[in-house]
Amino acid sequence: MPQDLSPLNTKPSWAVTHLLYLHGFRSSPQSTKARHMAALMAERYPTVTWWCPQLPPSPKAAAALIAQGTADWPAQTMAVMGSSLGGFYATWLATQRGCKAVLINPAVFPARDLAKYIGEQTAWHNPDERFYFAPEFVDELRVLESPAFQPGPDQLLALMAKGDEVLDWREMSARYANAQQVLLEGGDHALPDFDTQLPRVLAFLGLA
Image (tube, rainbow, N blue to C red; front, side, top):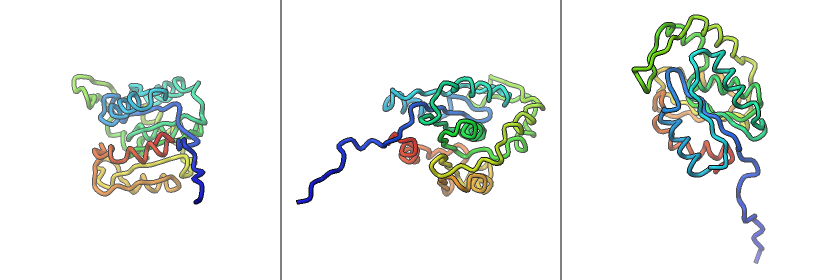
C-alpha cells in the first residue's frame, strides 16, 4: 500500500503578515466590507497586522498617510485591499512596494470621474459629516496614476461586478488584463455578495 507522504501541515508556504484595507470615495472604515474584513481578521487571524485608516479627501495626503503607515511593513509578506477609489490607491501602493493587492470594483480613471464631485460632499456612512473635495485634488489623482503598472496574476486579484452602476467593468478588466480577474454577473458597485468571494481572497493572501 503506497505511503501517504503529504505533509500534516497544509498551510501555504506564503501567507500575508500585514494587511491594509483602503475604502472608497465618501466611504470609511465603517463600510460593510471593511467591517467584515476587520472582524474576520480579528477572529481568525489575530497575528496578522491589520490596518484600515480613515483616508483624507486629499489624494496627496492619503498617499502620504498610506506610505508612512506601511513604511516598516515587509514588502514580501504585506498585502493591500482596496475598494473603488481605494482600489486606485491600492494599485499605487502595489506599484511602489511590489506587494500583493486585492481590488474590488477599482476606480481606473478617478481624475476623470471625480472631477464632477468638486465641492462640498457628505460622508456615505454619516450624512452629517461633510468634507470639501478641492479642484487641486483632481491633479493630485493624476500624479498617483500608474499607467505602466502591469501586475502578474500572482500579484493582483481583481473582483469586478458587471452590474456596477458607478464604474465600467470593461475599463477595469482592460486595465488589469494581466491580473487574476473575477468577473461577477450582476452585482453592483458595493459588491453585496463580497462574502461569497472571501474564500478566493483568503487563498490569494495565503490565509485559506
